[in-house]
Length: 267
Image (cartoon, rainbow, N blue to C red; front, side, top):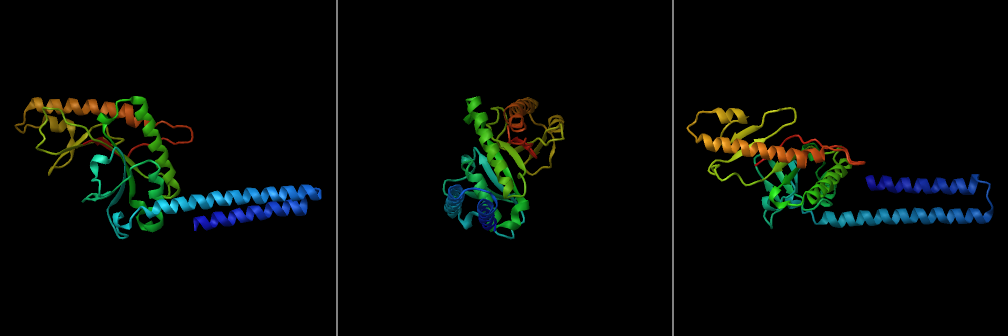
């Protein structure tokens, strides 16, 4: 429907321009012919480039197999996973279904708007459930300037999705990093920072979410030195993430609006 509208607008603009030149402007015959040819050539070129763009998008969409997309009646979150996502997916499977939602891997920034467009066309009922997860593995980024440039490229790709998803999709950030040597790896822990809440939230597998400071004070027989090490580690990581990730995305860059994550934290 959108392509048809663009085509009709192009025809309407071409027709009005020719009508203005041939019927209203007091020009000589030669000038009218030259201007008319110029309008036809420009309109034809615009139509060709639009057709070529649509064809390239169609080819790109053909590589998005319906088998990796959530069903039309899916009730959970649909998450487009960007950034350093290689370690979260296997080479043969580009999606993961969990209790929390349906996760689709996006390997490159230019694929994100195409995937958003494809979902809007083939799964329009799921648009309200779509969000973007920006994954970051700090150990993979030793050059700060290069890392910031990659963030801005992903930033632009997220903003480009607004034409298909009725606005810029909600964005959240996940940071994967190796825990300190003293921290036990037997228990899975998730840390979350939410805008508007000063306290960092922590959740262990099978437990409820509690503020990190409360977990630190709990008398559960755990090594106090291990807890302090974990708290210092997470606080230093949060400070790094705020400076190198959150503050970069929160800055307006030319025509790019600021992006504020719904939630972010290390895992």
